[in-house]
Image (cartoon, rainbow, N blue to C red):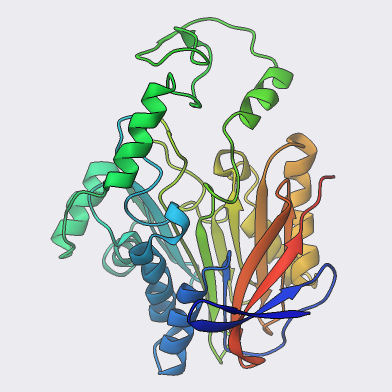
Length: 347
């Protein structure tokens, strides 16, 4: 074990491959070493906030701090240079969900997702009409662009719009910018897998915050927030706001949250699968591994990770493609936020 000081928060950094972590409630767990978000949610929970409110506080902190440039405003501009946001929140007792996708011009995506849950009978709102809903609920509209995101977009355009997410179009998307028109092509799986590598999906550009908060009564909540993939086609919605893909919560199993190549991962609902495995008695780490195995089988070069927490506060993770995956934990087991670092596998 190696103990380090990280920023202003004293954080325990744990390197571990097979250990079983934790056994106490309440608990806050989130993807990546976003310790400020973990700390904010934990402080709110200790001060008497509900697990739902604490999760919103934690994810909102990451949105405000623009965690790694992949959460909140000012990051991951699309092909038009605009930043849009995805988020969701799920109640493990009722299985109720509120979510937003491709949210424009509103910074607090997790707050809007909570409003969808609290004030509508719907599950997911998207695009401009999600923004219209947000303004009705009192959220401020403003540009999500920054000088940094504008510079990123301009550099991408100067680089002939590389990388991008187009295929089977004219002109050749590997060489030129659009606009594009469709063409008939025999695009093989081998070519697709190689092309996917060119998207440079890595911890530096796909580190969504996924958070699980479980209170002292084992009431489970899970949520996510992200600004999605760099240079995405406008209108793209990833896995983060899709329940069972980006995150899932159940008071009978626990909670899980995913991060990585969302276009791939959402096809397999790994968060749902992990929670189902925990309901059947698997440990969190084993459940995460079982949930990720079919993805690696079909897409052996994909990059992604899954963190899981059961209803007794045990937690674990599994990752594929990345070299390492880190997640953050706050619980009665330790007075400081822990960062657990897990080596990744390729099956």
